[in-house]
Image (cartoon, rainbow, N blue to C red; front, side):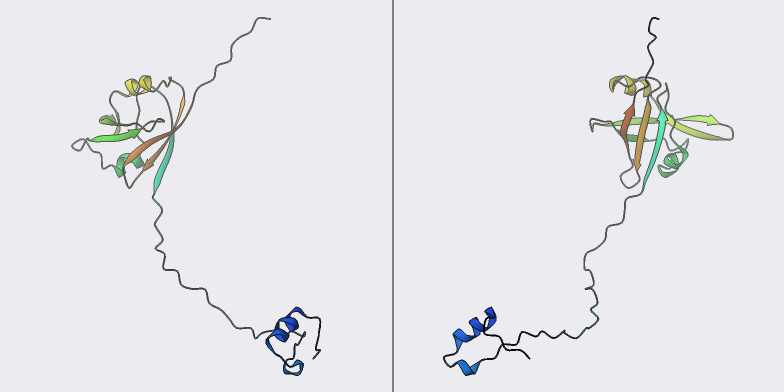
Length: 155
């Protein structure tokens, strides 16, 4: 053990005692015992991630829903219902679904789809990116990539 008189700890300790022989400061530090420490169990409730379906469609005169979306909405010929569709400006529109014969089954789309395209300034041929949130049954238009055309220049 080494006793130091210049140590700041020694100075603070010395000020508490009137007699110099009443204190001892050790500059040698011993390692503490190692013990295994378990992390505290979290009390935070983890929220489940909301399942979503993402898909891309090319803008056409009609819109057909993917089968995963129509299955989640439980669409059938006898159960046609409105689907909430959110555009890029976060405005929600209720779109009516229509059935279309496809082989032995049916596929489902929206009525008045061309009106929706025109009101949102989207042109035929643009790529439309959608996200369908299963929990709220909301179809969200997330991105529109307009079709680019090359202009011919004169030679």
